[in-house]
Length: 227
Image (cartoon, rainbow, N blue to C red; front, side, top):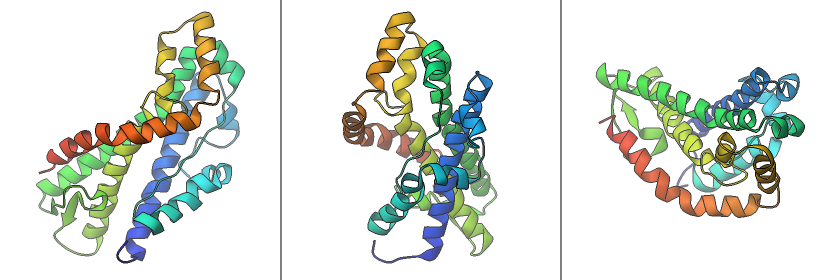
């Protein structure tokens, strides 16, 4: 980073915490609807970041702050508890629960896109610099319009990133549950055992290498719809 901005940092932190909280709350709420109240009873069905921070303080708060100070953008993780016996008994329900997290991010990104589109149509915003999360659009005036432009830009871009990244079909990402939509019986149980095994680090390394090639075209195409 060339310079530190408390305003930019604050906007990033607010959007990051709310985006991660929406992701985990969606997991928890969907699991409750499908028969596993574990996360619900643990207080995870909430957009309040505090319960999620308490569960994953490093991934939800410390790492995002460190990554922002180092590079100007935030990364991290969170988690919601679930009943492994329930997931083994109902693999398709477990898959739907897993996919609910990315779905929440896509919905949030779409809502922010609608806000950006409205601001552009109303002349409140103009297209910003391609490739900058916080400047998908730029406000024509300072004050609240500027704040709205930054928050909506970050909400659109960061949630799109979270949704696409978590759909990659490798453990421990949510997309690794996709095969459970079609696998049955012993095949589903065997897959769950493998996915819960020691493949998490390998999966993250693969995702880290593959993801930019997948995400960049999607992001630039979505940005082009705002120009």
